[in-house]
Amino acid sequence: MQSQESNASDPLLKPTLYAPVGNARPGARCLLKGGACACGYVFFPFQAFGCERCGRSGNDVQPSTLSSHGVLIARVEVHVHQGLRTAPFVIGAIQLDAGPVVRTLLLEDQGTLPAGCEVEAVLTDAQTAQGAQVLDLRFAARS
Image 1: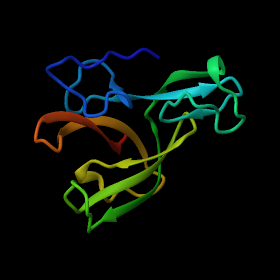
Image 2: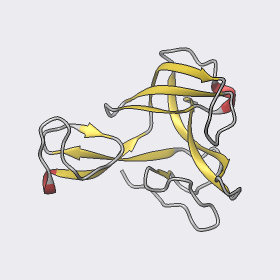
Image 3: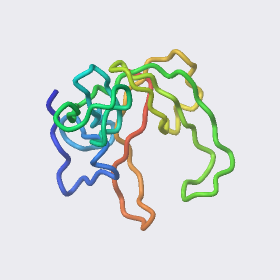
Image 4: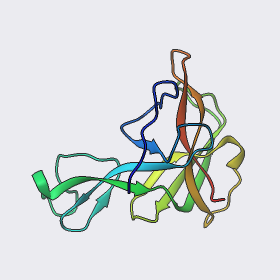
């Protein structure tokens, strides 16, 4: 799969983890930057240390763009958080169609999605710790 990287006017919070499909704007769908091993194991995020399943490394482990479609398998609402994020917020465990399970934030209005719901990653407005406006990835019900 091919993706188009964001331009400088639409910075991504974590461009090493995801890329927009088309122009980087709120609501745009995303692709995840994962990896695949020659043994068939697919993982996210990409890392070149070696396959978690078979131990292969080097050219046997390659970057791979993953679809961000999946199924919500669990969610939890966080009411108290010590970090920079203001509670409450909802974290979901997503079984990607490509195989890996990712734990990530759901869109703010998606906190009541039931387990088994089909979801996909989209970009949303966010702020860095320094207050800069950026775009970040969240999962929402598949449209």
